[in-house]
Length: 305
Length: 254
Ligand SMILES: Cc1cc2nc3c(=O)[nH]c(=O)nc-3n(C[C@H](O)[C@H](O)[C@H](O)COP(=O)(O)OP(=O)(O)OC[C@H]3O[C@@H](n4cnc5c(N)ncnc54)[C@H](O)[C@@H]3O)c2cc1C
Ligand SMILES: Cc1cc2nc3c(=O)[nH]c(=O)nc-3n(C[C@H](O)[C@H](O)[C@H](O)COP(=O)(O)O)c2cc1C
Ligand code: FES
Figure (tube, rainbow over the protein chains, first blue to last red):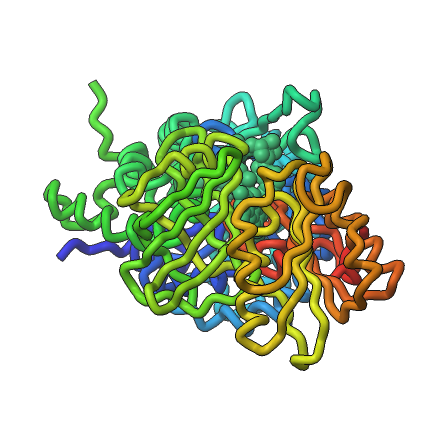
């Protein structure tokens, strides 16, 4: 039997390294016909903001070669609604339920984090400082070292559980941003959020997305994400949660070899709603076959040279 | 409960611009209501990365079979249309809400379909028939060739047709057909291209008729998880894949 447990530190223990990515798995409820929550390391629910947001106009998605663009724009009913209506429904899922928190100013992040800190059954927040679809969706914070230091250190003051900081790939040097987040008090980092992209319909000469640009995700982003996980793993000491285009267990193993301690499945949930549980089994099978007794031993085992 | 199932293509009939296909499930079908849809995994090619939403055209629970009507508009639908009997196709089903059924068997029902939008009305017509209601179909196309499987619809209920070029039925759009003047309807159900649905909805509003439409917004997950498919309604943005695809026109901002 392979030991699948992953210790991410600061009270966050995963039964296996597989989480589902924010914005691609709803609140988990949408997938209960396909996967058992007790099979997963955790779920990261939809991006939530202090106040309700209607999100961007339709059309919000465009398919691309081996991927998709989205400009959903953080549509959500706000933290109060989450706490009153959704939390009671999902807090007893037999897995780690993690909230993805977004904001347009520091105060929103801090107030949001304070309220989530009070929820017993949410062991961690994933701080989204990297949404490319909202003018003030936090990406302003996520693309500069000073911005990320500021938001992470302020949230750190009020949030006492595990704080994951989700990084944007839309930067010149992601290692620098990662170091700034670590120094400001992040317990772990997740990367990558979507890559800024664009799609045009030549026939109508119009952009396919209502916001003209959007975030690219899916299999096509994997090489970029993998490179960034590898670079960041060299730059920081805190654990890394890798994501971006993971579509099967082999992809997941590659992210762990590159330096990730855990992984997230995003867009692949749309193609196979049962994929997350399959990846869990596939990683264990890989370890059994290749002689790793613990899944956590895969992290950083890339052979270079 | 929703399923992910590998269906076997049993039969495929090509109508030129579109195709009718009958698929068999190796496991018992879940309960399927009229207006629901499937998400089809077309193939593994980079150009059809996401699943394609297709309405359920008919259901045969005794054979664990469903059928689909697919219009060839792009890579995904063309690839699907080219499959031959024996091919295996992965689908997630049943998705979405359903048409609301009449309260009494005395209600008079009009089912309006345009182009490939005739697809979900077939199963709705069959269900109404099983409840003792004979609806009136009103099917529209650009030309006679668009009115595919008309005979199958005629076996369920009377079919009125319009074609834009006048090659079959009354010439013009479905909103101009004389059935609107000759009969009164308690409920109107519509599926077709958006301009056509808007025109029918406008007509229904004008006459204060109850009307439900089936929307075809672009989708990614089909499960209510990604919020890509939203329609702006009187209650703000709602997911067409989960709270729809069927909407009463009073909820829409048309
Ligand atoms: C709930 C629902 C039910 C549907 N039922 C049916 C059905 O029963 N039969 C059927 O043939 N089609 C149906 N559709 C539409 C079908 O999903 C699209 O035609 C299909 O996804 C196109 O895939 P493609 O790869 O062939 O084309 P693509 O290469 O993706 O696109 C080709 C062209 O079709 C347009 N298009 C793509 N998707 C849609 C869409 N959802 N609505 C309108 N235009 C679109 C694109 O903008 C493009 O111009 C339904 C859609 C929804 C949301
Ligand atoms: C439709 C959609 C909505 C998303 N919403 C969020 C969100 O609310 N918060 C967030 O941090 N990331 C969000 N993301 C980004 C994903 O969590 C993930 O970082 C990205 O898609 C890359 O992973 P993937 O290629 O496996 O999907 C969203 C992605 C998609 C496709
Ligand atoms: S397609 Fe994902 S929410 Fe409707």
